[in-house]
Length: 636
Image (cartoon, rainbow, N blue to C red; front, side, top):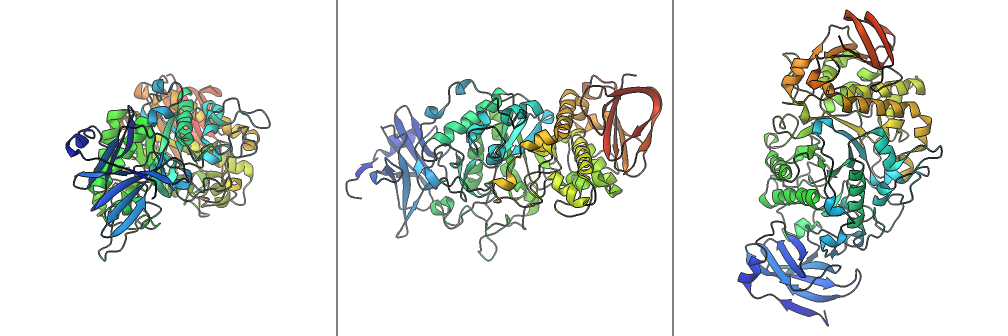
């Protein structure tokens, strides 16, 4: 372009030395110097075009040198923080223009990369920021989408749909009940799992009405621009850090939902542009494989693809202080890569959470024994979502069938298997996990019907009051079972999407957390809060090893549709001597034989939950309400 300045780096030996400390490709700014380092396959020439503005002309061309096979680099004795850039790659007579897939910042709608000196994006106090030190079995994970959290008219938050909404304290709904971050602290959850906050492709950064969950990855190492106050500058980085910092200040960890199994684009993907044919799996016929069901599957088993994933999660953990990662369609990712991810993350933060979906959408182009599908995580310490338990409790995700909590007792064994954390408990109860820390227990997440909507579909002739009881029972089963507890945001006030079972682009009216429901269903909120408090204060419900579960947890004889188990004595160091848990899936009251006449204290029934005693009695039996969970303890 006329008027451009061209800088050519000629000293190859000294040039390589500048990059010996950089393991992750990309552009780095340190001490007034801007470093460029990219892995680009089979290129003949690579240049970086620099512009001062997002839409302005490129004013500088920086020539990169191939310092080793496929490794291109350069450096400039100038701080280029705030400059926009794009790569130009010459290959086989054609010219390809792209932003590199390692980009740590991009401009509006990802048209250009943005060079960033990361230390300049830190909010005050960031160097002292640290996530909570929580053992993973103590975790109660709360899943929420950035927009959903604040968009409702009754959220009380000013920064609706933005990262900064999570930093607003003192917000409330129309009745003065807490919303936002105060609500999260009041509820007692330990971690917030954010639906994708990396840069994704299908939302226009400038359209305030545009909506998507974000499972359409574009640039994995840059935050999404539509959630920032200004998508054209560093606001997205600074404001996501402020979100993390605000949650950490409330002793709440932050988990990222990451989607390395596929990319939104294939031919137009930055990965294809830097290395045609390399980063995606192919069928034997040479076609792009589609195990994700949405167009492609990332070849995680290849060296540079694996390196990209490991480097990416490490970058988020170190630069953004992220406390955990939830892998979308983890069943498409090879086991070796996931173990490499775990090894790297454990060196950064020994408390970091790592879990994912142990399935794929369509058969992948890699042998299943090489993938981290359910059962393959056994002994790795990586956790997987327990869909067997989920379906046993509520029935299929979107059908009108019932599960254990809604009156179908055929799931008796499956529920028991979930209760013991899917370990090999005995000859009949044999699950897929070595220890309970490999299991995420849940009854609903962003996918499919909400729990409340599912129960309404399963029991259409029952009342709202009955659906609320079934909802409380389902969540009480999760919170009293061994493993890691997980809930969908808004469940605590009977979240509804009005029966919409795939709301990934349905917009705010369907998806937003309806904060007025906290007033309408305060009893349900307090029940959830009490269950979380019970779990956090009593290690009997989060035993660390299979041997502890087999030692302390004993099932009692009970009829079909009733599950009774005891925890004790002082299970896992619990302050209560013996705990009795009863699940009644019947539509009527049942009398349960407690075997010994003792003084029992009830802390959970069909209406209230927590650690405070609701009633005490001295006898050897108890009447349990229909469709409910009862928790009692005895000091004898």
